[in-house]
Image (cartoon, rainbow, N blue to C red; front, side, top):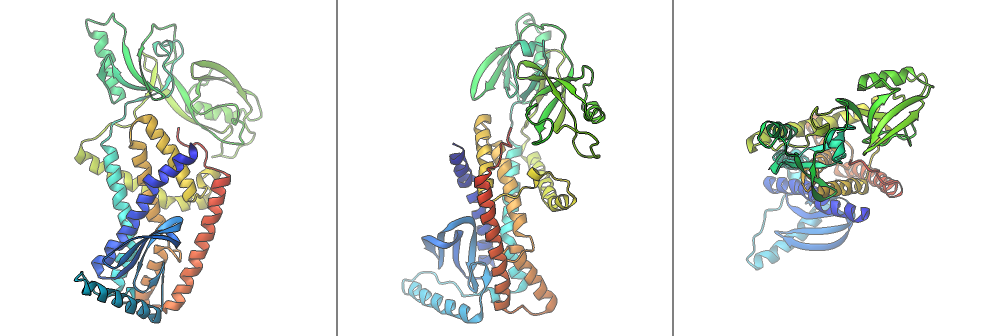
Length: 469
């Protein structure tokens, strides 16, 4: 199933984004008059020629690592010399003569070398530009989608706990009235308490594991806390590993510590000593012990758990999370552009944080197409559970921006490396010899392909763990 989901995510997310990227290059070539010989999905060797249109061959290639647009004067992703360009030009002219004999449209021939530096910059940057446009469009669509709130926890002894509500339940209606936010749920409950039917039980419509059920809020079974702390993650090879689980709810630490800040401070002071946690796991109350690390440097974890404060509703005992409240279209445009800017900022900061050591090994792990597809498989599964495309849209937008950003890195063999040579040509006033530039891009491409193969093997041997929760 994981394999099938990964393949599905490649087909519906990654492959279209690669096509969009290459379509940007293709459109830029058409606008600048550069002749396009081939539009390829995947890297050579060629698997099959799909069709031909206006002199451009559309092909499917064996290595599913990206795609390419091959204009006149280039071989795959590197420039060729004038002699090779002239051979291609003559072959293309013979093809045009056949088209003319059939009274079909004939385009003017123009090689990459004949384009101005500005036209080449436009051609090289257009793929990443198209990815950015696609990401913004996806995020605008995502901003218009509403998702009902999800239950993070139900306080012990509360009406929510008595009724059996648990982590992950999605509340879609209160007493038959559809809701799409925590505020709407609380408003409906308050309206019920003030209505003539206040003696009747409150009925919640809940989605759980793909099934829709009705839950009746029970009677309070005793006092319950108004706040707690949710464990959002557990770091491997740390004291917490094997003791806690993500989504455990911390009710107390050594019987008294309850807030996020106080827990962090307390466990650091108790390094090397046993600390007792009372946690809620589902509907079970557990007592767990852990020994924090001694003498932990500032900024490093003592136990290895991610924490998030929870506030329980004083009437129901529910801690809810708003996932998405759809915006009107014109508001969604601003939200989509802002979200794209935030993602791009994170991508730019990533190498800086990596150098500073601000990222964990798991966060900094590079992945191949296989790893991205594995992540995509998790997103597809979560989208099915949510019965909403929201996660898939956000994931596709992230990958689209990452694809565009990565291709602009100044590495030979990538668009950014090609752009660097055009900028050098502008500064020097003359281009580098095509043969010399070709060698540099070939070395860069071989390095990239070698790295990709290593990452593919790593992703197959050590698949990406469950990151969508």
